[in-house]
Length: 471
Image 1 (cartoon, rainbow, N blue to C red):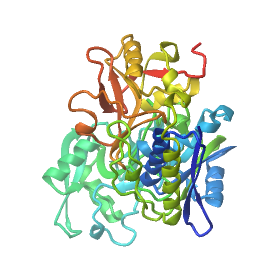
Image 2: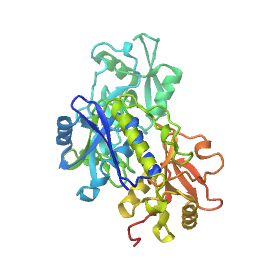
Image 3: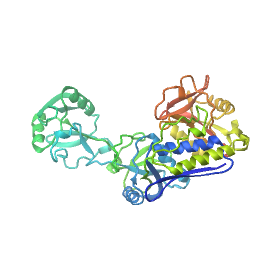
Image 4: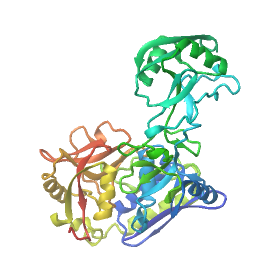
């Protein structure tokens, strides 16, 4: 059985869904693929493009801006997972282990004042700087706060203890006084102290204010209110989401100012901008907001009539697609399930327990690279096999191929054969409180029920190997 589904966009920007269905289509496969595409499209009005042509970061940016919209900046883990899926089909042909994304470390212009009130600054005052020669240099990749000494500024590690200068002003006015605090606190602690006891850490808007702080501070090094967030977006998105690898970014040798994503782990690393990497671009899609749906894959009876009939921004072609799905389902209603799919043939020899601690996304990536996929549990029989395999785990839970989508408020299996069988622990799953970024896991011992856990936890996991050797 085969079901192909894609969105295309014509020159006017209109989005058109297209589908082709073979006669052996099963209802669960059809609905799963439809919901998966709905989730990815509705979650972000952007389409991701993996370009397997090694280029420098600047050349990659130019290519994306010419052929698409721009290099990709990411807002959350779900968006990152959707982006990584765009490259999964060609990973075996990629010579590099990482790819550029649209973040860079703007060590000169990426600074902002703690006191952000617009009325406090006149023309050009927000941009006043008095850096010491050679600064900022972001030495060892960890200097994101500003130290003031003898009228000159240097970037320093925010965790260092320093005295600091607070500004005590009147709301809505630029007038006020400077206060020297002789406590030694890190930059964040100094900021919190100033905001609680005064107005904020001091901004320096002019050479005259710079001299006033010099006279007040004397010789000691003091914090002022200028800091930066490493890894800035180049496409105008103000996203705070980061997924740095351990001890990154480190700006090794002071030369790593661009950001790459590691294809196996989805973690981020700073690298020299001149290095040649494949890269991720994005293009924009017209709004396709999906209204709430009662369709469930791991928690409710699936009904074709529950498919949203016309997501906003997608008109007539969507109705035609739903009609195709309904027709295909009716035509296959009498098909023997044993004739299609592969999960009904799953045996203990087709399951592999991986006794390595990985996040859910890392587990998915590992299973797809080395086996078939993170295991789905559509039946009682498969649950028994998976439960037996899980007893050998070194963690209290093991990951399953089960994920929650905030967009449609439902749980779904990665495998199209995931059905309606449920083994949730009491108060978990659709009956429990859920939030974005949770995925499904199986208890390794005891009742071996399903539970929801943050996808960032690191657990053992079980891969299915149907059609592949377990060796």
